[in-house]
Image 1 (spheres, rainbow, N blue to C red):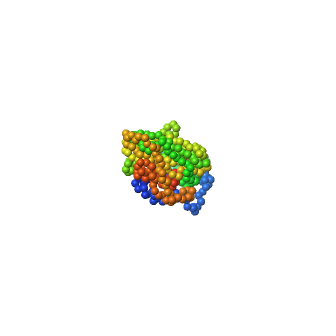
Image 2 (image 1 turned 90 degrees about the horizontal axis):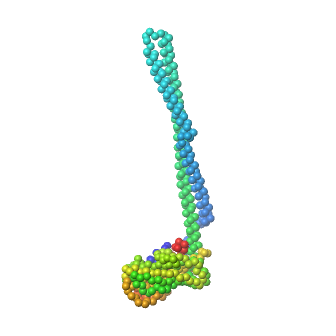
Length: 426
């Protein structure tokens, strides 16, 4: 879950009905899944399955390629059965011509016999009759030859067509086999990727991982005025300090800004912009991602991040708050972060206002009670109670309620949702 979502929910709920936050269920519940009735396969097993699926897919692709080549070959006019069919067609054509010639010979012989004159000799008539008899015999033989040639042609064509149909069937089967193998391969790859992701999340401190609250990692804002005039920009500093006795391999600062008009009912977030500098250019804080990592932050050391707040000239008078926090990830897979979001409140003065000399914004003084929240370390603390004091001249402002509410859930829900892989938020 994006950190912005829980923060925005906290602020919005506090601005409208702060009691919603105070009646929320425990936010730091044990995230471990219920016992599984069936053990999940190991990554090694999934890797083996993925490799086998890939081999099967490669074999299916090769079989499909071979089937395509076979079909192409049998469809060629030079294939053996195609050549045989062509030869049979030639023989059948010749037989048909021979039969037509023989049939015409019968007609001609019978015409010659019929044309003999009345005074024809016996020899002439016998010769003409013999010619008719022989022509008819030749016609019968030609007809039988044609029938045989036609049968051979039909058989040759059938053999050629059967071969082509069989080759097409094999290709269809090969294509379906390839499709099924691809589905198996995709499923195996996805299962492996998911298992690796879950393993990385567990190592990197995702929800339910080894992340712990670290009170000695602090984020402090200095130089942010308690009054900012619309149409101006102010530069300030976020100091991240590792007060622990161990080096933190990667520390990721986080910031969030929220503003409303004086009534607390109108959201002014579109008119305020929070930026940070990486040393070469200013980048806008988008309320979702961390700033660049501080790598490493040694025990007792601190690092400063340049920040800039800009208020649009069209912004009405109102109230604002900047939340800051920090998380760390170590190379050994451990992780943690500031237990609470520190909220620095400021007033927004209308454009053209001269606020005079003002003090720096200060974080809320009231410590949140969180006995109902169960941290990942297994310790408990008291249920969310009173909201934080604003620390500004507008002690009852709605934005003050928002800050207090966010601080009240800081040790619980906010900490949980900030447990994510750092490299996905760089």
